[in-house]
Length: 220
Image (tube, rainbow, N blue to C red; front, side, top):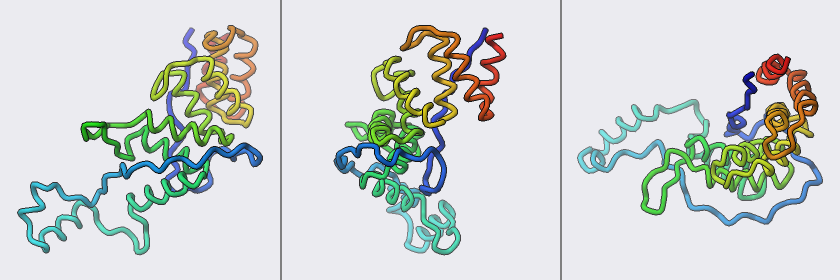
């Protein structure tokens, strides 16, 4: 019997527009986070090995090939990132979650202490998920729960994962509902309970979650 667990983070929200669960209106706000250094590498950068050998006209032409001009007034990826980070630092829960996703996926570029560029940065991602989850934002609670379940960016802690999945699932987050069912079925971070596992799989399946439907079939 193969029980499935969702392994994808909630989709990045670069435009801060209506997707994901609504944060609880009365949730406690976290302290204003310390401003992080610029970690975004602009797509407009030209490698230094070429920079010194090109005329201004050649640089301009090369930049057009690297990053063609979009529609008028459309924000560049760097501008979108900077706005997202500004909103996140101001305490916006959706932006904090979206920024966490960018660091997790590597869309936001981080460097280690030696200056080496990292493929992704789960530690910084987890920090932003923490800030958003503390405000009751369901997508961030799910994302952070997933990181605790897998031990990415934080120490593995199945009990903490269950706690976070529960909070997100109670708000209707379908992936959290499926994962909570998995945790109950496997007895990870919580006593094994097939009845509760089935209950959460059914709630997720009722919202159309394919993994939950497969898990219910596997339990038969």
